[in-house]
Length: 299
Image 1 (cartoon, rainbow, N blue to C red):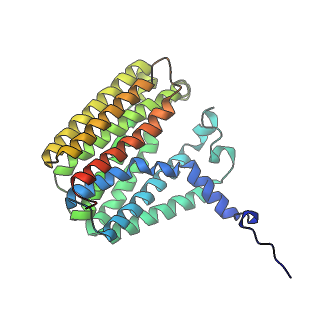
Image 2: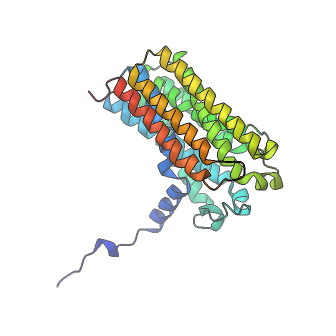
Image 3: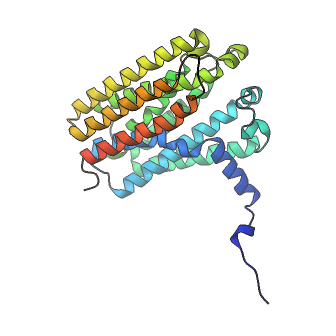
């Protein structure tokens, strides 16, 4: 008897389909935004590449935290997403996945974050619920404050602090400047992204800087935030006595920010997605690569 075995004929299970749907829903690949800054904190704490075990648990902690936070955000925003023409086809409002599966995914991702933090050190574990609750809080801030973008930046600013604590087992003053830079970086590009929903936010009573002051002022505030990011990174690099390669990375990142803002105009928002997703991912990777080379992480 001859069997014709072909992997292409194998259909993924129902649960696997749901998992893949959730991973697409939370844009799992965009973990790249926060992960480089977590490793920047770890690199600066170790003055080089942390050992392989620490690096692995940092990656898993970041994947768990980011996946949990994004799935939670989609869960609590599902009713608004269903009303918004831009987001009505997302997995939850369109019925591609049910709420219970997403809740289960949030719990499993949170468990991964807590366990990875525990494997790193005591302080990482003790602070992990605080970090996760801070990230979850962001999902509700759009309902009561125009400065929800700052809360998102604050939530992601935990990444470099977490990387530092993962290596040192203690929190010190030095990485706080790097965390502040991340706060303004994320807040700045989130303002740009929020411009896409200005009319919807005004109609439904959601809060954002664009819905409060309009696109033109919002883009000016975003520019100010990114200037503050560059200044804070400059001070951080000076504080850590980084050399030419790191400063080159900062120059390239600054050029990237200038290009990002050139893509978006008050009367032309067609390229917001490129500015939001592509450019910011490149900026974070450039900074990580240049600081890594500077500190001899690959030698």
